[in-house]
Image (cartoon, rainbow, N blue to C red):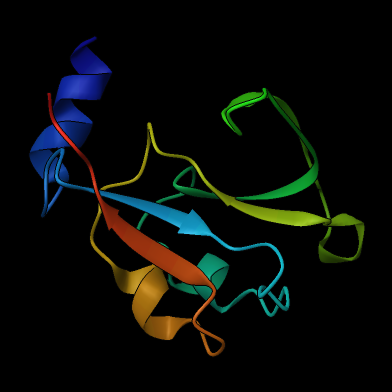
Length: 101
């Protein structure tokens, strides 16, 4: 919990936005990976398992770029700085407003 609170303090847009990568558009250029502000916010994955609502259940990290099948934004570690969205050459990264109840 302490780590989650610290991450929230670093976020420029706390709890307002969610960033996702459209895997259909993504060309795996890795520009977002090179520009990410810290190690775990954007991950290079070999496998990503999701539930029926497309929420991640489990993933397997890729150790090398050639093993990568998915580039994924880890919402728990994302500081919502928007750098990834700005550097993506094909506009594959979407920012959406989080609806609060």
